[in-house]
Image (tube, rainbow, N blue to C red; front, side, top):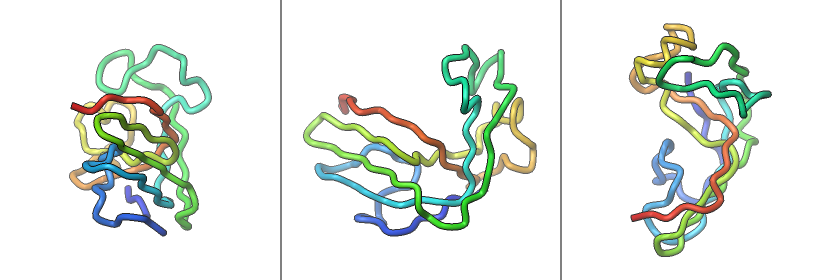
Length: 120
């Protein structure tokens, strides 16, 4: 699986690091493989890395990078929202994703929000 990076304010920002490593605002448009477990029922008590595993996954491929991802950091305060990228390479994912999708370098996007975080 692969994430497409479009217009970006900082191409050096690591794809799977949602928080900036320095102060400022980061905006990037993303496309590619979308993979979101239990997309329509996020409140269900199911897990990424332990049982009970997800039973449904929303998947599609977007060939244009049009989903926005916005991240900010000011001092030790940070947040993000939008098309967050994640690495699809953990062995536990084999419990709810096809085996051919799990390999080193595999990545996908999902909609996520974390507006307030404290960075140490």
